[in-house]
Image 1 (spheres, rainbow, N blue to C red):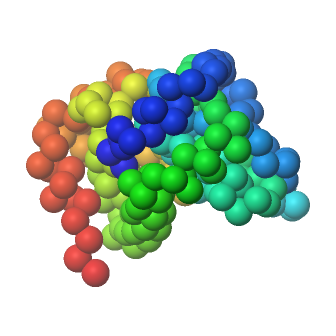
Image 2 (image 1 turned 120 degrees about the vertical axis):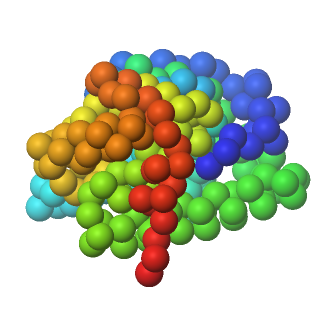
Length: 208
């Protein structure tokens, strides 16, 4: 999702927080609280289950919100959020967030469009996995690049990207090598550079 400038004023009076890699930021089941907006870094959003398994939901980065679903619904957090790398956020109270949303039409529309985009890309990525991990990885990297606002995706380790695509790190390395061979990527973990965006776009195109 492109960064929505309408949120700038909402979070301008918030507080800045910094999380090291691996630190939990929000816990599933906890009471609704502050809403966070990512300033720098990446976060991993997952759904842990009682049997110990974990479902990947998404990776959120620059300009994106965390905890907004709980604030809007008034219910407990519905997912875990963990810092993927050193991550800096701005935090505002639930009350301040809701007040801004109630009074600003642009923010209401932004939330609706964001939710639609999240569902669309998740469904496309799931479909692309049936065609091969190279296609799914291409789409994921394009999404992350757009969020980062750069052709460099910095700070996300191999293990997290593999989990996002439901593959092993070894399978991910094979897909990365394939894309490097096509001239689409230049990788030095945890830095992934997109060197030919057109190749990724072609591979990511969903024919179904």
